[in-house]
Image 1 (tube, rainbow, N blue to C red):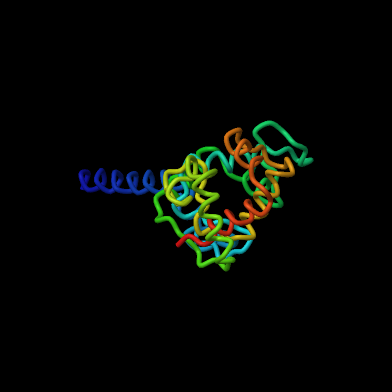
Image 2: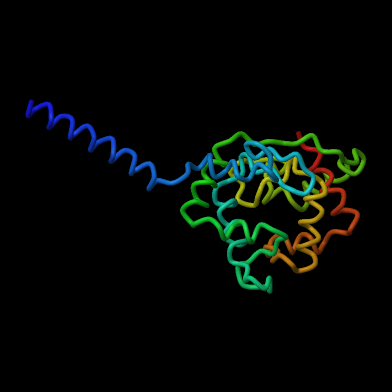
Length: 202
């Protein structure tokens, strides 16, 4: 009887410890990533047009982006290493650095998704040449390289690509030096063409 009591006590204790560890562990990376589905689609496959696909994005790019959103002051003034947004800055502040890292790893583990994006075929053809000359060194494989820390551009929604470029050109987002050097060489038509090129990638 004494042995049975000891066994029962041990069993109850182990169940308690398992339950406690699950509570302390918090939500899983997938559960947190699922909260992004309202804007970025199920499994990071955006239904567009103003939200980018997250599926297959490198963990480091996701983490850097979320950290930049999180660093934006409440008054939305420009700050070093901050990235202005309409709502992402408020969302990012709700996650710890560890949770952001976990979500980044989760999205990086998914296959790259390229949406079927409406675009101008003639502009996309012209944009292919612009891409080869100005973008290919950083945005490899037509902008679709899964491990590209410059962000996946292939198959992203055209309006989102356009909004992002406008933010860069207006100075709302800091443009990387290599990117700025290339963008300054391009005309508005060439930029429009290469964005259509990225949107056309399947």
